[in-house]
Image (cartoon, rainbow, N blue to C red):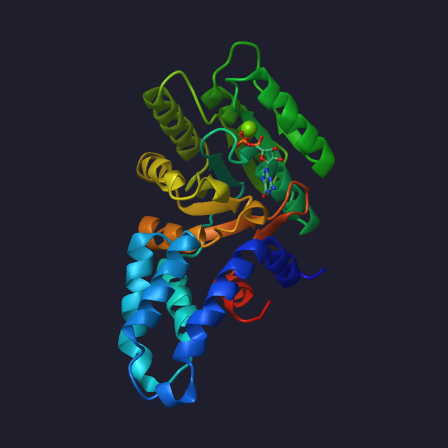
Length: 307
Ligand SMILES: Nc1nc2c(ncn2[C@@H]2O[C@H](COP(=O)(O)OP(=O)(O)O)[C@@H](O)[C@H]2O)c(=O)[nH]1
Ligand SMILES: [Mg+2]
């Protein structure tokens, strides 16, 4: 299956829900005799409800509905207008991935259970296949089982992993991994971090310390701080996301578990509210179930096809 088909399959629950409702909305709005007139209030209200149901969130939904209402006179189809407005939200936060002298350092952050460790395994595999050699760093030293779980993913992807020396702290493991990455001429260092410590403040301090170590050891690092968000958590995830974004310097999002939800519209809320680009989406538990995010493909998967 191609990447687009895999995305479509991952988003199928969301697309089905949107489409079922959209067809009702569109039946009224896209009738030829109405195209020359403004889209009616009921249509916009139905659109609003549909977007909220898909977890697009209030601010982004309001933005989209207003924009569609303004543009509706030109006679474009509603489906087209909504797709374009959503695409525009993603385009508005697009940013290039910072690069520099290797190794490229990627910190993966987020609360427990969102899919950080799984994502690291998938990323390691993807980079390796693309001919870039990564090294994995186990900086979630808070739970012993977390390191073993990461080791399984490292073995699966066939890449090295650096783990903590007895009694050392997460920032020290990051130091070791960066040293190993440089010494072994690796292209990337992928750092798995803890999602929960005794307190929130501890967690944020630890992430800050890791950042500082990375900055000192590799110019420009961490190049990417990827926040992993679980799509099934919905709007609640955005609250935690804000905290991570401000403290940890998040510059990319990985949205996991899109396959398990009809609320895949959360991607739009994330881009709109957090102003951070989505880099990857998770569409399953397997090693290949991580797709690079494309706004165009996301919008096409949701709106282009009838289900
Ligand atoms: N369905 C689905 N499950 C996922 C995805 N990503 C991660 N998971 C599952 O989510 C659970 C928690 O993942 P884990 O990587 O341990 O999360 P962490 O605590 O953030 O490191 C595991 O059961 C994973 O298999 C995804 O994209 N889709
Ligand atoms: Mg983990």
